Image (cartoon, rainbow, N blue to C red; front, side, top):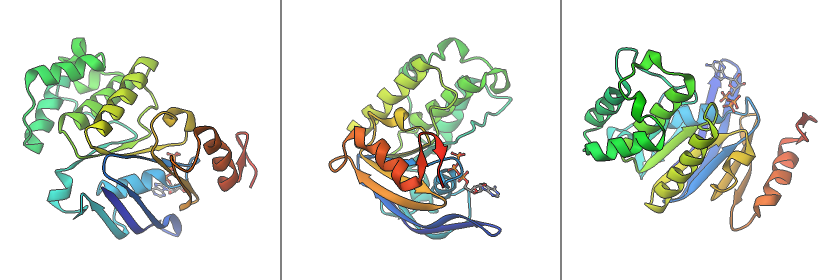
Length: 236
Ligand code: ATP
């Protein structure tokens, strides 16, 4: 379970997250949906421990800043970060050692294969395209067998095959009981995925929509209505 309560983050005078509160239950996929600048990355980075904030964040019942919590979640950043001197294969080896998880060679190869990285595994981090880096970043997150996964705009920069594969992996991990939070500004990217959608706008959560209560086709209209955006135009 992922629990965020009263999360507030300011950049100077700019209130990027304004008393944010939400819960993603065990084995569910939560979506943070909002226009550019709504504060989605700020929330995800706060959960991942990359920002100082006010409020409480609990991962699997533990304070997010604790080592016990950090062991249990994986974070896929909006912009992938690679180590220039490590190969793709070595990135996975490094991360499994750092997390102290066992990953059989067969498992590593299966994951690389799913994201079409098999023939790229001996390439160095700085020899990869942006989309390939994103795929490596996703593989690094998955190989740690996390109980909670945070993905910040994960589909941006991926080709259609990788998007399809990522969606499949996300649904498989949910079936295994993983709790997942995905940020996006593209509703169509998460249509098959969401269990609960939190719409963010100007640093606040302006709507919480559980799948049981809202049909897929109604979510778009709700999104435009609560954010004041209409047909791609900002009507505020
Ligand atoms: P996008 O969909 O464009 O990625 P977002 O919803 O993830 O947007 P954030 O990146 O969280 O939005 O930004 C929220 C607000 O905080 C914006 O007004 C942004 O300008 C501001 N902001 C984000 N990062 C910083 C920073 N490092 N320093 C100052 N202001 C920042």
